[in-house]
Length: 238
Length: 251
Image 1 (tube, chains in turn orange, purple):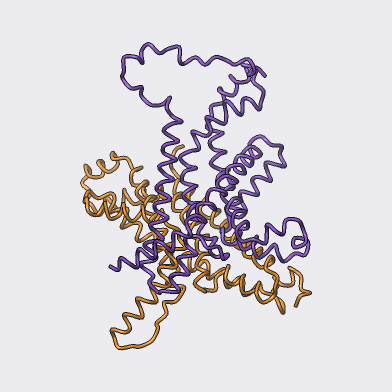
Image 2 (cartoon, each protein chain N blue to C red; image 1 turned 60 degrees about the vertical axis):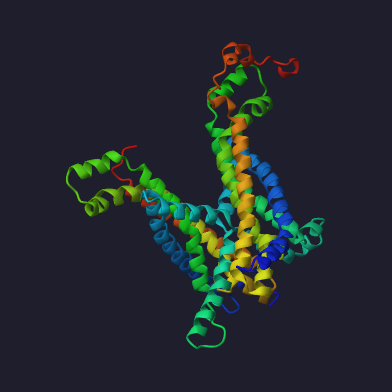
């Protein structure tokens, strides 16, 4: 085993780890994607809470973003990973089930990542909403649009355009954050690299391969996001 | 609410605070130097070096910090040459590996902030400095850097908060800073929420103090942009604005 070089180890052939690593990369994408969707949903609600005039809602959203942006993501992952299992175990006991119930690392990880990215999404959406000029909204009202139509036809497309660069940033951050989910034992890219490193004693090769795969994913995302931005900004004069 | 437990947890976690602070401070210091170096190379270096700086920033911003840390801590030991080099006593220690990876990482992010700040200094200022006869290094030190610091400060403050949060990753390579102690405590006591609240509170306090320090620095550095206090003396204080040249300055 020791004699295998980098390219043999990272090949598809016998003793090659490429299939495992690529599968793990898909897992990374799945965790990041799930977390991102959770974050975007929660972030929309929180942004709405911040924008709406209700004081109590605003205080809640403000506290949420302040706290979540001040504590490490790793801590949040630990909270959901250990806390989720404990909560599930307690719930199960209520229903007469004895023994330990485990919250899957995937669920705990993607919820934790979603909770963290929600704070970032909130700021992005709020900023994007602020960037929509009141004149557009007034014009829509003057033309007689009801609130729903105004939201769908005017607000949403404009907010989407302003929010896109920020949302892209949040995606890239979420992607890299998903690496932390490896502490829960989910076999995503970093965990798979650790496994490979452990069984071949070639840690540098494996973490290097993981880094390269991350780089590929983030660059591809960057490229797609750039295209999307151009698409949504068509017809905008610079 | 179990107050004795909270108190006990707070005391246990306090043991991790110095580690977190030292990690943060040292990486900040190294990171700033690296960020300025990279920004200067990128903006004014020869073509190959500016490409190199770009590649560096691309790689370090495109991969997770955790991978970088593992690459340095576990990865480098794979090579015989590293294990026998004079650097091994340093690279063997999780503490220095954490510092190294945090500094390299924050340096990459910071260099983009610093680059933007350099670019934000109006070109006329540099021209004026040249016209006064300043050498390049003097103009950099006296004109460019002070103004760039002002531009960079708000964004760099954010980066420092991210850095404080990132120090928690050091716990993954066995360092016992706040998160490391918290993780141990959680697996010992299974009281996740309490430990989380106390550990989170420590980070919030650290970050709060950090934002106050950055805000204070910003306040001090932008005195010239604030409205003058309306006192009677302000009107008669014109000569203060003229700073005399010291003899040694005409390089």
